[in-house]
Image 1 (cartoon, rainbow, N blue to C red):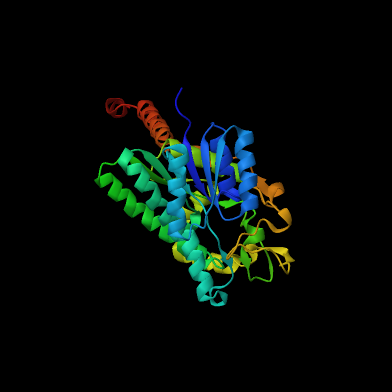
Image 2 (cartoon, rainbow, N blue to C red):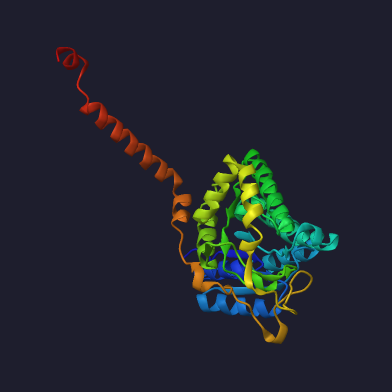
Length: 344
């Protein structure tokens, strides 16, 4: 039997990272869980064990390269190698740009962008000597289309996109068998809306339609298995947003200026004393473990047809082309010949 996969997931203590870790564990993988919150890490480890995998718990702040580097060494020491590295850890600030301090913006950038750079660098250090491995960057539709109230997060996701494209070119140039791919996400039902630093008058929410984190986890597993595609889109809104932004970005600017503030806030006021994970973990307070899902399960979708289309776009394009050709041939066959028209 083949050896179990060895997978590293950053941001594994909650949300999408938690769901990804559990999904890989369902294959029997050894999953290294990197995150700051110890309560969340313990909960993620329980999820991995219950799904049939083997957890490696590594408290780690991905904004610190030395910690990420040490985490990589620990995985090698305990598991021998790394097959897949998933970069997912992030933080954010919900606020107009003028209300975000320089230190807050820097912190978001260090976690949500440089954390991906550091994770990728460590992964390559261990994968390139074997000439084998996959790096998956968990992105967002906001990697292409910025929205109001999330300037720091959007800037980080845009940066990851550029970094990903440049690195992909280098690996192709080197004819490396190490692959890097990116999964662009829609709005997801995660606990982040309860723990990010929120300076808005009302509680934060994802912009509908919303998807469960398990939908993303399935897409990440597929991307890890088929990493030669440069990126995958999850959710119809992701595809629609990226296409609209390519066609009419100025119009989208005006639309988001009108709708982007209200659509990201719930009716209830922003509670005082809410947990914030910008500078320290939000979990662990009163033994709290946030888990993978947030507060929007009643509104969230547990499947996405667009994911299948993204994963099989070649077959879909061929089928469409075949159908068009068949219709065109039928139309030509139904037309009278030139001689028949002249005789008539």
